[in-house]
Image (cartoon, rainbow, N blue to C red; front, side):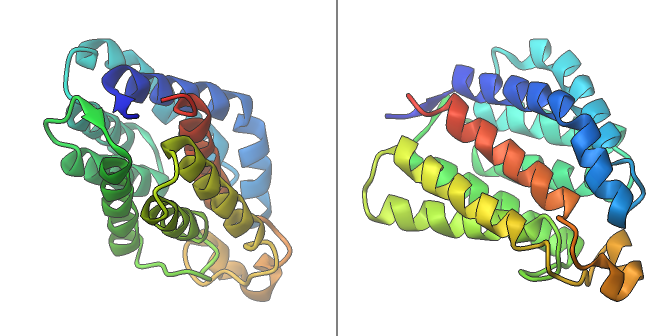
Length: 211
């Protein structure tokens, strides 16, 4: 089973919807340890993405992802624009020219995306950032693919790992980003970037469950 171009487009639309639904929640999380704008920024970015999608419906998956990334870079404020922009642009580069993605293709795209975020943000596991959700999600997906399970099952395991990573940020003291300025006071709060990353991957799993 594979992820089609239409599946990729539906994923992006689903992300926009879920970020709209969770805009206030993400802002609430960010108000505790950040600038209280993460929800609004992600909402604005994906509304801009939705406006661009009609122009790429006939393009390959790589072009679709790159368009998402470039739009986020140009419309999302703070660190989120460059980081999420990099995520989608790197996924797009890894998917260049493809009309559909196998499990291995998505694994390669996700790996390129996560590596891009790590390089751009200079964050590692345990720094209380989006990397804490993305890295375990990637590893879980790769392990599942190696076991030759269905793509739906692999995506499910990936999301479960992302959720666990997101929740694991609660007791951490932030070492990167705006939250790091708070020092010990950043402990006890769930990281908003890890949360939005989890939501994005959860949308992929739910949208592509029957691919």
